[in-house]
Image 1 (tube, rainbow, N blue to C red):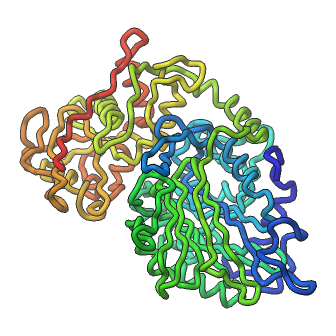
Image 2: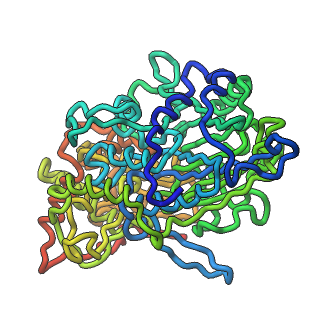
Image 3: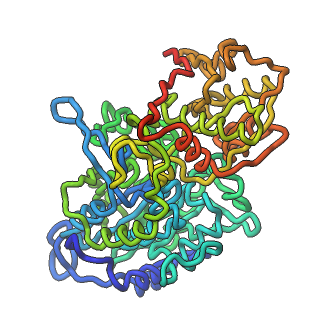
Length: 605
């Protein structure tokens, strides 16, 4: 398909024909009737057939990506780079990402592959830059339609604005509050969102379709989509109200059996849960020294327990890159992939379909991650889409709100940007209650760094509203609560214990709060109690402290249950407004804000 080709004009009708309903998959006969049109072409047969029929084996191309998060424009800073391992063992970084380039790469990859499917592993929207987030991610859905995405699982961020808004993104219609942004009604997604393990509490049935079947001629591949069971712990309570999230493995195994009963034996699971690779280079060998040895974390356990009936796992959530062969419960090789995040990579997997068995010949599966480099032509249709939405966003997004003297990055256990945001929330909170003592910020709520280099025409060192929006896009409020010193100490220990023990979530702290994090210890002991100080004074367990957090943490999010138990609640304004006010008040062109030192947490390794 040429780089300039638009999405297939009849794509919506085709996709809707093939959708599998929540009540059950189409019968085999109905699937045959719904088969995609197409004729033999390059890439259609794995080998030469005998007689007049097709060969036994058919290569099916599976292109996949995950965690796009509405990054239509090339992401900046470290968020817009990938690390590549070189043959001599050194590494280099490559600028990557941007929907204009992703479209070109995917279209070039499909050339010569008559049997090609494009799938995603969730978090296509949510925590998005202003060009998408300002319009409730309608621009990203339009872009994914043009990318000819066939199917995706939901991710946790698809629930940021609740189930009704997710349904609108799927089915179309103007926003219930903000209305239509253009003279055309939003059409919704041409592709199905799958949510097999997300049940409506009232009906005990999947909120969206649990699976979907792709078919071309006699080749059928089923897709089951799930998000992580722990979604309610990392999404605001309002976003998951009335929903139940079930175990990933049990759900996938349940629907794999159902698909096989319906005659679909080639199955791919789209799982919005991921792992932690042994290397940050996207092209490292994940199967060294042994199969799957280069990956750890939740997805490793899931992969080892998902039914052998599932032939491949497309994953996400952790924003890491890996292509691993993790043996299934029967000891057979099975591909587990993730393409990092923000559209910087895509995965190209070859699934060899056996027409005799209707299943995938696992030993023939090949897969690799590819960089969405910016040295290819931009896709013109994607450029037009971005220009359209940027024109609408420009009056808001281009407004300068502050000045910085250098990059203020979000990277690190304690980051300069994390300190800045915590300070901004403390300063804002003190306008509500002068007795506010400190502020705490969750690291997952900081989505991008502030870069010194200009992103547009604003000039170097100028922070625009759009850049700040990209940093904090969740529209959380700044909340005030009163805690005892004992509760405050307990909350800090929850960073490294309970649900956060295996993968710590280190809160970013405002000026004046200091402590030691001893990583040579385990569990809650890693936060050294006697080291916790506020303005140089030890925390008094029986005293009261006024603490500012965002509404996500104030609801006990990210495993910080103690932060959901404060007293004397006060709800302030949007956390982005707090950041904007801080930057405006504390910086100018002649006196830009310098990156904070990030020296409030002493780390012992």
